[in-house]
Amino acid sequence: MTDAKLCWLDVRGTGNATAAVLEEAMHQRIDGIVAADPAVFNGLPPTVRKILLFPDGLDAVPADLGATDVVIVPGGRDARSELMAAHPGVEFGRYVEIVDADTLEDACLAARLEPWSILDFRDPTKIPLEIVIAAATGSPGSIITTASNTEEAEIIYGVLELGSDGVLMRADTVGNATALRTAATSRSGEIPLVELTVVKATHIGMGERACVDTTTHFRKDEGILVGSHSKGMVLCVSETHPLPYMPTRPFRVNAGALHSYTVSENGRTNYLSELHSGSTVLAVDVKGRTRPVSVGRVKIETRPLISIDAVAPGGQPVNLILQDDWHVRVLGPGAAVLNSTELKPGDTILGHLPTADRHVGYPIDEFCLEK
Image (tube, rainbow, N blue to C red):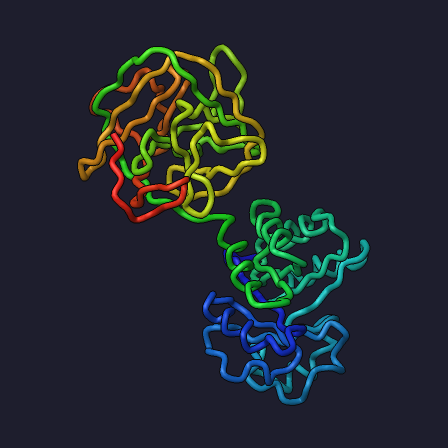
């Protein structure tokens, strides 16, 4: 297993659209092109891996491999030893179709021993893939799992949180390469965090606040970004940390007043009041690493509120309005958990400064004054 999230595009069935599909794939920096004919690779740059796949066996492999980098065939190393000797400059890997317990064991063996394994799971359950990923932990090779569409690709990239090293998806038309690249990059990323200095905390009376209950278990150094303005947000921690009067709720972030912004996928923001079951928000840890998480429900209730004003190193003001209760917390440097009602001028909290203004949640380059 590796840290890579590879995108392999299968062009074996693109027909007359092959040239256009390949052009898009190069533009999207697809990592690998999978074909059955080495002539397809003519003219492709050295930055893309060129893979020949022959699920039906060694007999289909041509004598001249051209610019091929990797050949994937079924069966173990012994069966292809002569082919490997004839092409010392080409890497070889194994194709496994998983249909039962025996072929699942073959897949686990391939994942542990082969530099490249293409795994084709014929049943929709992802439990066999979980077993293979667990079996391959610590192995240097890469697991590439077939996906029938981008929705399945997103799931494969995230199985057991580690996910498959890569996804092989068949290209039907132009647009598939872009969709596959989006699926690979939407699972994770990083947001730059900054240290904000608290200026003042003001009790502002009653209002509606939103608790965002997700379908995930937050880690202790994770939360979601929330702020009154689109260009300044604070990292609000989940209720993963113990409280004296109630059990922990590691799926929940007591996020802030209902008008507040939070960050979802692909750089978009949403008001807390817009979130609902099935929405997506971005979980962010204290190093800025992110992952999309699904919302299970949002609880909006009337509570006393506190307004936290802070300032960024460059002087930019940031505001967050929270429930006025000490068990509502934000994160500081080093994953310090800070009770909101105990924040005082000079305290340091973590936040994010988006650079673009917003229109219906999307970043846009226009004049916008928020205060």
